Image: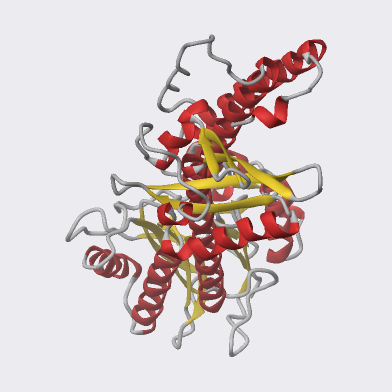
Length: 468
């Protein structure tokens, strides 16, 4: 009941233009926020998108209320024609969510607007409650707060500004924001108290959704960061050093100069199942391998560690590359976490310079000799985990002193077909011929392919045959 607020106020018609301008700005801003909300709704499975959408919903709701408040400011308080009852506000509108009240301390009279009856769930035919009776509508936990605000207002003249929960007769609960202040008599005493009460239940629900989606997003990010850290630590523990020439516990094979490099994806959150490995065996031969297990994260990295451990163990036991691939396929096929993988496994015998190798759906090794390069003809072999009981053929290649063997995973050349990637790598043959060591060749390849954004991680392994 805002009668005392507007009494004696000057005509505000000259201010309508400024208020109309604010309404237009609010309407335009709402349209822009609505456009952002539609974009955020594109992917409903993304936690960040859900948080953005909830935030936009809250902003739109607040802008709707702001626009309606400005319209009220422009039009002034509703005044029904003389002799007619005040019209009932439309349920769900802004007016139905804002009510007013005045309590006269001198006459003990109370006056409520129709909107306040609706907010508090009271029958408009019943008399308004006094200040002493008002707490009976409030949730028991919030009653002391309301009593303290009213007391501070009446005794100390402090304005009221607080929220409480209203328990309606129909069992429903509403969140109400109350703002008010005392009205002083001529002698300075408190004559009455007026208040505006706003139903903010929907607004608080929207804010709660924003908090919940924000908390969910933060939890998702924390889990992703934790998983990323674990994947990196596991990868670092399993793979040989990422940079520099590969080192072996006993000095390594004297006939091979080895170097390797790991190239992460453009998104540091994507730690995949790519690996490279070089292992000196007891009989003097050297195992070289690269591979890629599909997917990303700790599960895939742990699966890669399992495969790499099995590969090393079987190689130490003397298993040949073709048979070794068959066992890896069986291991992956029987794994609790189904996955697909590709790999190439080479066994180099320095005694007769023979390279025996097998592959499972993986790019063939590239052989560089005398300034030119070519891909080795691959033996038959399907992806690991694709089918049970698969057989893998072997191939042999006689290497010469000065030959360079390059093994890599598919992600080395981003967004390219396998044939195009092979062509780009073979084009580096003249530069490889001028390199003095395997590490120089790795550096050349990284300079060529390490700058472009890549959707997946990649591995590169270079083996150079030294002169006897």
